[in-house]
Structure formats: C-alpha cells, structure tokens
Amino acid sequence: MQIDLSGKTVRIEGAIHPVSAALRERLTGSGAMVVDHGTPDVLVLSAPLLETNVFDWDALVASAQAIGASMKARGSGRVVFLLSASAALPVRRQPDLSARMAALGATMRTMAMSLGPEVAVNALGAGAIGTGPDDLCSGDREMIGHASVGRASVEEACNVALFLCDPENGYLTGQLLSADGGWSAGYGRNF
Image 1 (cartoon, one colour):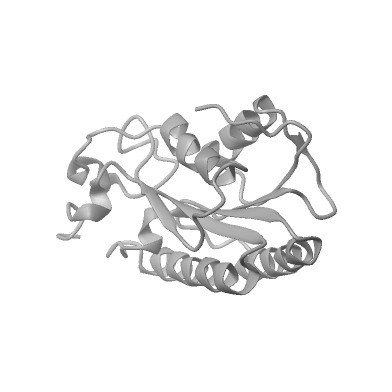
Image 2: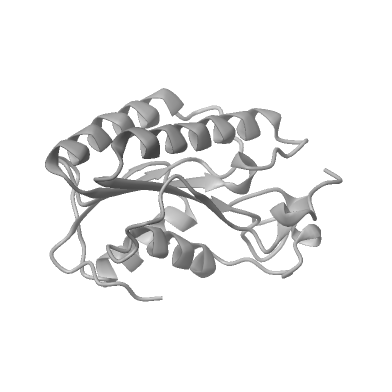
C-alpha cells in the first residue's frame, strides 16, 4: 500500500519493535519527514506488542494527549496507536498486557471523541506476527493456530497502519482495526 505524505511530518513515540520500525520506513517512503519534537501531522504511538516490565505506559498516554491537544488547536492531525490485538480481546496467558492494551484502546476512543473533528484518532491491533511460535514480535504463540488466514506479517500490519495515517482517510475515527488474520473474529475464544 502506498499513500502520499509529501510535505507532512510524522512523529513516532514509544516502543521500538519490527512493526514500528517498518512503519517508519513506509512513512518516509511515502514522503513524510520524521521529526522528534513539535506537533506533527501524524503521530504514531507505539506500545510494546509483547509482555514487558520496562515500559512507561503513563508517559505514552501523556504524550498522546498533549500532542493531540496541539493538533486540535492547529486544526488538523492524525493519531495512530500501534497496539496488540489483545486491546479488543484479552489473552488469558497475557492478562497484564491485555489490560494495558484495553486501557490504551479506551484512551484512543476518548481522544477521538475529544479531538474530533479536527483530529482523527485510531488504532492498529496487531495479532501474532512472526514466522513461527519462537520468533514472535507480536501476539501469543497460540494465536497462530487460531487465525483463519493462517499467516501474519509485519508488512500486512503496516498496510493497516498506513491506511490509518492516510490524509484521504478523514471520516474514520475512534476505531481499532485488527490485523490478526481473523483471530479476534472468534478463533481466540478458547484462550
């Protein structure tokens, strides 16, 4: 997927993982300039996609809210959260991560309500991504066998995130789009 971000700025904050790294490349390949400070045209907030004890969740939310408010004051912007699919459907073996993801999903929705119509705020919910159960960068090893599509890739997750960043996508806000191969449609219910 290709979008046109010529002359636009992008700021990526939070966790660095294969999805956020690939998205950065895809955004710059779409013409965006990555910035570290100020109010960008597109803000990507990257949460860890696997369980971790070393991430400042509160700082990510505070940054999202502050930059979102600046975007609203300016009159335009896109905010995209990179989350785990567990934001929509908890994973039994990952209760802490599932709860944190659900909280970020709720933050995304409340931001969409308060920042609209000037700023569109959405989220990508990444399912199991990796070539096998031992090299996952997102999700849970058991998700792989419960996804109807039977595959997941960083590239496919990035396509969803690019759609959410696209300036042409102005009506969609407050939504979590899961790139999880159908796992959240019902295949994960026995978790």
